[in-house]
Image 1 (cartoon, rainbow, N blue to C red):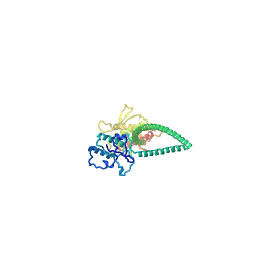
Image 2 (image 1 turned 60 degrees about the vertical axis):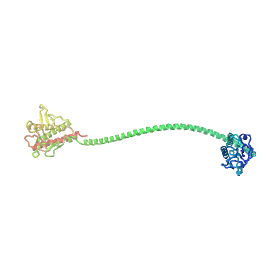
Image 3 (image 1 turned 120 degrees about the horizontal axis):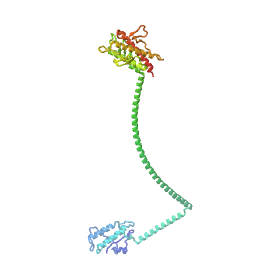
Image 4 (image 1 turned 180 degrees about the vertical axis):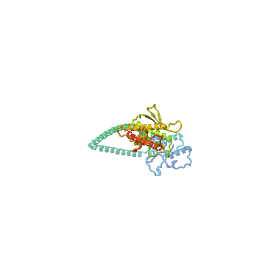
Length: 435
């Protein structure tokens, strides 16, 4: 029989186990003695008594006792409250027990310590009575609290209760209203989310359109700049053309084409001298070119005035100009001269100059026939005799013939011819070339 004992977990008095405790193989017949505890007063190196279990088994029991007794003995002066998981093993194992019975005892003890078994906590009779009295006191206190709470509830004013009921109903109605508002708000939030998504899509589309419009605007602006430059260039060209037009309008084409100078010793037309002097020799080529320019000027003036010559027709050809006789089978009279074989004679050249003077006489008569003032030809002409006189001169004047004439008088006669042509040019310009 072993000397295993249990203490009460409240007052630490030895306990007498019931039949369930004996089934675990625990012996309670021997009184507890502190001197017989193998784990409290013996060292590990002491030899076991005869008839005891082997060393290995007793070492396991000693470890079990040391692990189960995690608190002080009641004789050590320590006081502790009830604990459901701390026990102290007393006594020692009998030498006749087997390892299986030891394992069963240890397993049952651990079940009690850990609270996993269906066994109650070990308490003595007095501690149990005290515990029941304490529980009865707590129960009575709780019942008195309940009764007081009921009396307090019954003492509440009926009006106050109705007011509270009304407030509760209002609160419930407010809760329902807020729930409906919350539901409506959720719906509005969903609609707003859909509208926001549509607005974002529209915004993206508008941004794309804006970028496209910006590109189109930049392209059109570039075209505008090009057109502005082109317009500025055209305006500059227009101003230049207008300036040229104004200059040309002020310019007389007749005077610009035919330039006659008769203020020197020899008259000239377009820088070709007409006549020659001993001191100023002039070649026949230059004289022939001057006669060609004079024939061209007289023909242009007659056409501008609408005059048709009756006896001769002018054929200006530069240095080879001539006049054709209209009544004598188109006889040509050369208005040029050059020395050498095959050239015209002085007689033919003189007849051509006489015919030119006759054409000038016809132009003067045609110009004086109108109502407007006639052409002012200051030099008097006698076409049949071939004479031309200065204005206001009393004599016959100068002969236009080159044969049997001096160079000075012939050159003077030619100068007077160009003077009359210059006056005729001024008359045509003043009459037909005005705006």
